[in-house]
Image (tube, rainbow, N blue to C red; front, side, top):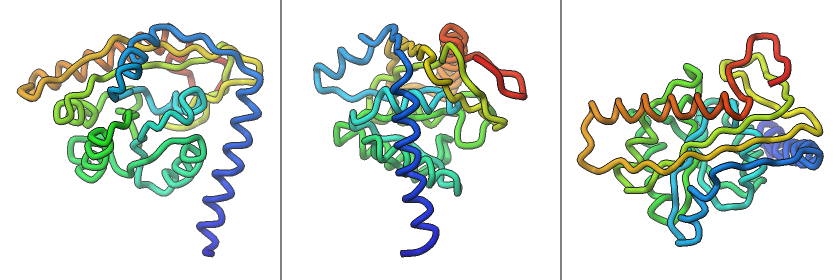
Length: 223
């Protein structure tokens, strides 16, 4: 087995163990979960969209639900892939931009197989909290509803990364908020797509502020 493969496997195992230990100490508060649970009771998939920096608590609290996550093809994407796959997610590698054809094709195929989709529309490299159109294209093609969601913590570290990646502190309270579903009709044109992108961007940012995951100043600190 190649050294690189061993490193990726070790990262997945270590990440699973560390996250499991961390989240054993946290508590959870959800708001608006009926917006996606109604679809789940009917056996209908949805498209979750959330900011890249809020990935960690969502991986834990939506683990083993069979969702398919779009992950960057960049080198660090392989580490993320190994960790989230050990939490029961499937992955598609690619981009959330309109030009990310490979990623979009994989998501559309997964949706047609009945899987929920999970997309970080500001990934893989930013700009942070700016909505790229890939999720809208997937929604327009598949007919699935988009469910915006945001996660925050009562106390957290923030990494010195482009997305200010959030790591909840031990014993913090995790807050997750879900917005009502939004459908993108097949006939939606470019101007309306751009308007939807701005609208969801505002929704995600407003919810992020509400759950305590607003933009953090460089240097880390509590959220």
